[in-house]
Length: 161
Image (cartoon, rainbow, N blue to C red):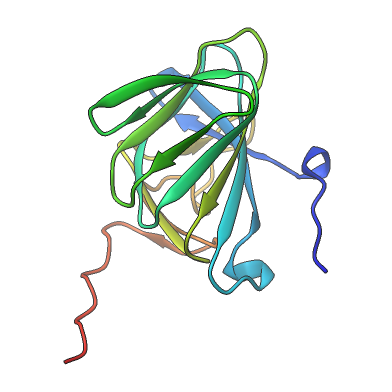
């Protein structure tokens, strides 16, 4: 059995170069890289006054707030979500998460695929580390599990007749 203690995960901090409010720390403890076949999980933290930037994911995502209070935008809708509540994000719908509370926002995202392509509205840069071109840094679009990064998403796969 492969288990993860969230408090012991090594989180990568990323943001946007010209937007000090876009700052988040994240790790994908479950994905194709750890042997999952059909699911991936992201754990992320956002400090008060900061946000996870607008992006799309290639797979449907369920967000479970573990701690804190967030304003979640999904497409044209916005709503407040608190600890113990969930939000559904359909695949390829732009979404963002902003910490509107006074404590660190802690969130689990559950994906319906073991690999996820994410495209942000700006390239990600490392925070508190030297500049890096290692994915996901310097990219708008990247594939989880790392280190695959793409400048443009691939063309859709042709359906079999």
